[in-house]
Length: 448
Image 1 (tube, rainbow, N blue to C red):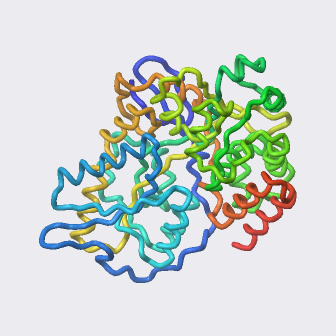
Image 2: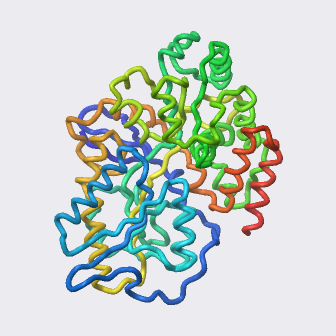
Image 3: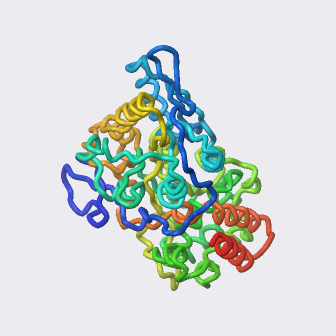
């Protein structure tokens, strides 16, 4: 079986070929000038790289600090590279995911990026390219021509120049649910509509069960895993691009209704009381330990919840249900190719060559195969190993209906920050959806 990407086939065929969904909407390249990084007119060579004699030290900044299965694969591959390339040392700077983008922006503003950086497509990549902080890698693209389709690369391509190679494809809005707890309140299958979803939450509360485990200490979960898909259910996938083009606004009624869902869930006490003091990994544990009936997070979490959990069978996966009158397609999942590997521009020839050698070694068919074996979706056309988890096929089936854009892959970071703070405030009864929508729109207008 092969795991590959296509925007329209989505496992329409059976047999050895399997297609991992990837639509153009998730690969949007933001056309606004995202700002935030100072323009760069001269990029001196060398930077933080160097070494004694023939040994070269490459610095690398990444967010692979949590115990997710793909993070372990990445770190193991770095170690293997160093073992096989004793002349190259990778000096890693691991930054927690909730702080990573802020750290990257800070380093970029100071023109002090690491030699190798993990980057996101679209809104996050744009200012790095505009500031000439990362180098095009067109000269080495033949290394991936046989396994990465154009759709997988598009989010990291600006004006015909390729700036990064993705390591995985992620869906950020997977609902993991405890089948046994749902059965206790009369739901043998996951609710298909929002009204049924709310009904299930009320019944879970009446039964003394916490409906949803939320770890929003890092602030991104409500924005990325919730609003990305809840917003899409109400507004449709054309909304965020339209906002970026100033053809729509965050204050439009449909988006306000999406924000109101967070308020409604909070008023129903659907979340654990310590949601804003708990991180995303602790929230996963809350579900795994049977303390909550649901957890909404990325497809990567499947490794902890089901694949490597001896009690994994009791957990099901689902997408956010349809909403009455919503413009979005309820079959879509919010997805993105991510963890692009990019090289700092302006390195001296020796350091640049070492960085390119690392990139070609690190991101190749072996990496994608190991990720798939661990149950992680990838954007590549590869053979799926026979020992891959059966849960992976279930995840592929769930996410085959098309891809909605992830909020913070389209919207500039400054605006995302305002939304994240406002969503956290809604969970403790501060502010209204209308006020938050206005604040987010003002933040966007002030950028332009």
